[in-house]
Image 1 (cartoon, rainbow, N blue to C red):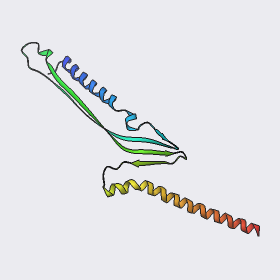
Image 2 (cartoon, helix red, strand yellow):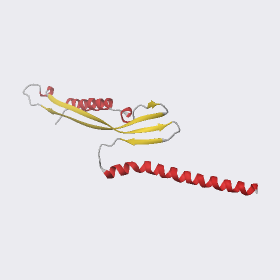
Image 3 (cartoon, helix red, strand yellow):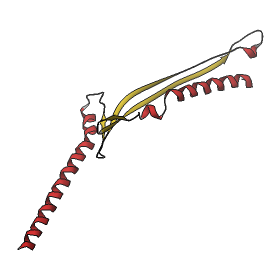
Image 4 (cartoon, rainbow, N blue to C red):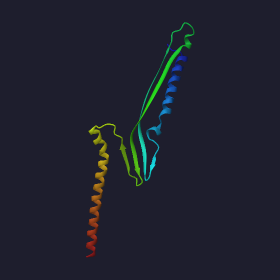
Length: 144
């Protein structure tokens, strides 16, 4: 059975490990600082993965068994850029993903938002064109 001193050592190792992990990655790691490029602002977006392990054990000893404790802790962080948010001066925002695979299905799924934007713009321009034609006809009728 562990005594209070041994529990304290394990808790201390875990606390130090968690604190170091917090130092390695924060919100600025995931959503990077904006980069100004002319009329465009680029914001990097990354995926952060963490892993850590910690453990300890009593070591058998003939003298002062309370002082013999062995333990270790380790952690790792991976930061992988996955996309960029591109904000133009006129307020348009696009997500440009970084593709690390040639999977056709993933590429199609990634292109859907851009395709929807293009279709929406086409429909809007056609609608605006029809409204302008109707207004022109009304003005012609009034002039006659």
